Image (cartoon, rainbow, N blue to C red):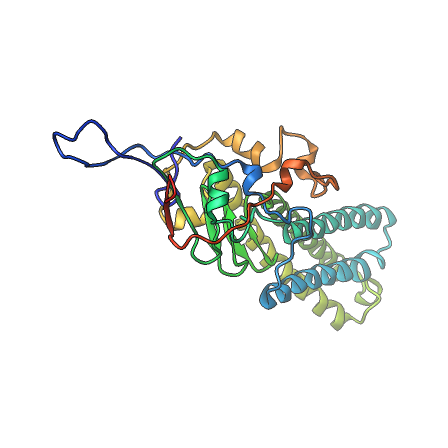
Length: 327
């Protein structure tokens, strides 16, 4: 299975050609570095992940405030004043369920380690513990001093190398990577559904108020009601378009087994891709089930021993390209 050019290579020196070139070397086919996923898992996997970025924190707060504003308008402007009790119960339950799942998905996407590589593991002791074959080459990230696994990229905001990094999203104040892409997809899906539902209710409420007296269809004054509904309509339409596009982009990235940053850098097609359905199962954590739609699946307070593999301490190797065996 092939890997990107910038990740790892087997470089084996040709032997038995001393008569022809006397010490020449040849480049063999690229292979993945056999680094276990458990080994490169962040050593802080049991702790809560949170990025201290001012812009990301502000964007995340704005996201929650916009959802709460929609909640306020839907409940206190449209549903509670409604004379149809069944209409209010059904739409209130549906809207609140979608909004809750959207915020829960947002929280999971923001507070889940996206697949960060441990900092400072580019030491002689750590590389020797990987038991690589002679002639292989590993690459060190000069920014976070970590050994870059296959398909990892450095994020300047998170200040870490992230496995299968798609992009850094300020709205969730986190990178979208190997471990939290599912929650980001669910976040965009539930926000799109919430926005669509809100727009449908706004249209029906406008039609109802036009046919009836405006003073009877809301507890607020008619001008205030119109302003609140127009703002909600604008918010819903904007977020419906934005999150629908993001949802489609993410599903396409999963099915094609290539991240956004890989497509941007032209690194596509340099590794063995998995089929679409298999890639979906990997991203969502198993065979198709209702847990695919749940932001709470995968919660566990217990960590297996291999999730806490100790990184051997030592001095950071200065070279960015490290060939095995080490000198």
